Image 1 (cartoon, rainbow, N blue to C red):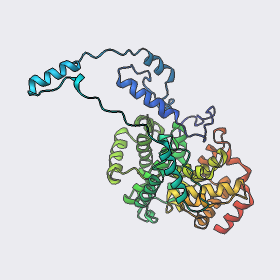
Image 2: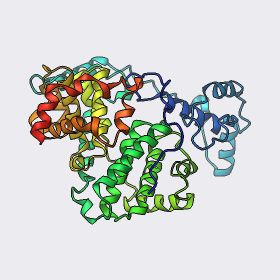
Image 3: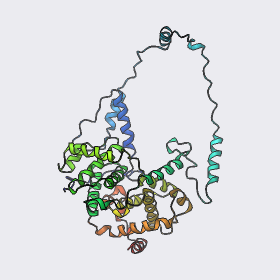
Image 4: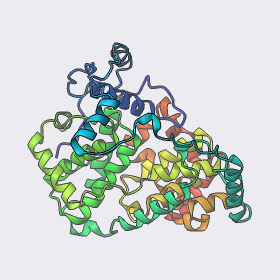
Length: 407
């Protein structure tokens, strides 16, 4: 099985550091602008993309230049008066003229004090010592402060519904080491394509869920891996890589027809259900509850990605891994940090519940420098991710103590 990435994989050397290091929103926004412009007749300026060219899909200057040339033309359709006349003649209806219809009355302005009162009531219903982290977000519709707690309650229900069996490797011809090799290679491919972080977590999730229900031979394991990433990219990305890019990245080990056939088979076996929540979704909520800075947040993402190749973390829910990663990173960077009642409330886990997961994470951190799988460690050694994989906190006494307890 050929598991290699052709060409230079360092495409992130000049990438700018975002608010939370790599969580790119701008590409989504520009992708939506491109979609709207194409639907209105603006000529596409993206062109034909070769294999493994820049797949960021942002043509900002050309798109804006094309959009400025678009003119708003008056509609040539039927006017309101003609439309009303035609209805009368065809249907025989006696429609009153538009000017005689009483216009609807405008609703009275909303009393913002009612919203403030409701938010205060919600804060009072919280447990003692728990902060209402959404009290200042009611004026931002994108944060959905009225429904965010119900949304995360539903997400926890979904992660339990799509939970992967812990013993699925017993039905497989492949081994845990083969899974480690594949995921380490997929991390490199994900970095090479410059995809969103959600795409990587969803790829591994699709892979595990498919291996749970379908035996896979050694010769088809890489095909399942690249097809899982193709499906995840279609689900998360505005412009996913083309199938030809995946054929090229596998050194022509598989054809386009084989990838398409495997894509259909995976989707049928998963019943087209791709909505299981990801670790990164819960981490963002927990980071907000803890008021952590970008360094702790990035360190938590590094710990979560270190767990991806490890089969021992398959039994845990994404919300558990996210909470354990944040708790461990906080203790590494600031040993006096407490997993307070606010974090317990919004993460739904106490520190005692997270301790076994943190011990296994500490063991992975301790063995990372000498491991044969270095894709995640090399990825987070770049300036884009604040060089967290080389941080001295990873060799702190807390990590060593927890790793000994795991052994």
